[in-house]
Image (cartoon, rainbow, N blue to C red; front, side, top):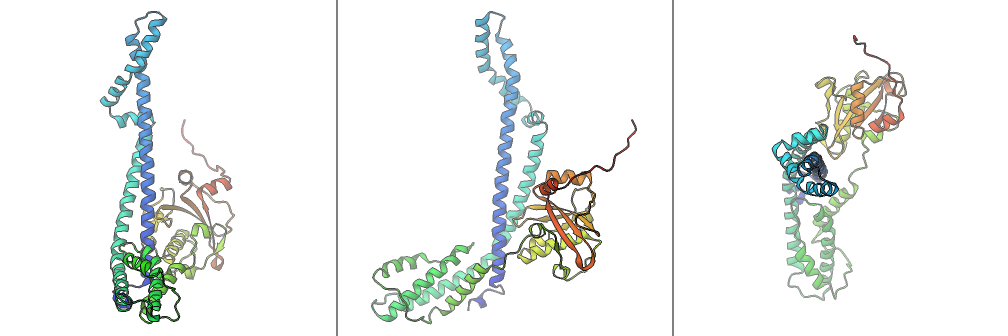
Length: 393
């Protein structure tokens, strides 16, 4: 059986790895689009810098050609200046550092774009590495699947169809059985990443041999029993995939009670440590969808790196993008007012689509949590200044 050839791996392990690979591939694609967009912004800045340089050189060139004559001389000099001003503008950009000029003309935007490009490129390299590692894990499993199916199909084909005369009931049943098996293998073949089961030659054979045959099977032959069983098992897992697991930022959009035992069975989380609770919730979610790689990377940055970053917990979206969580715990009510620092508020505004407020009510068995996306929080909450800094005049 195939299961004995997979060196300790099983279909569920494979499904988790293939899911991780597809997530990494999607992540790389998204990041490359983001990098392309940043490059376009850089080109736009370069174009704007040239226009500014041209605007500076045009009046200077005009003064060079205009000798103070009449209206005719004015318009003639202007036309000539419009053409020749291109050269000093290009010279201006060539002499000075183009990036330096772009930074001046864009009020520092170029430096921000370059930093973003560097960060995105680092994320791409990281995602590419993870994708490559997952690819290597998939290779031996998929090779075993391909070799198994290829051997089973070849043996059945040689024994029941190859060079056999058509017309007999046995041939008709074998032909129909073989055709059904090839069709059942198609979705499996399309899901493989590192290899393919060679089916095309068999499809061509079936096209030629089934034109005048009525493919209705009166009974199942025993020749392809093992391959049918494994195909069915594989397909069922593919369709089932497991019940949809909702991400915390969606699940807790409205207040919900938390089952601490399900979240973390290895350590006791106390109500005083809302940040640990948030970390545990995020890790439990990733483990439930087979993304242990992301679960292991969820960090309590407030505890590990200290305050000042503008958020407490670094987590991720399912496609690998960073997700920032500011935890606000309470022992009274989820709707009770709470303090948010200027730094936290500034970060939330800057990252309003990937930063969240996790409001956690810690009250024994009735502990609850509610989450809000940054933009949602800013829209639904009134921000009241409560303190001032006194500074000597």
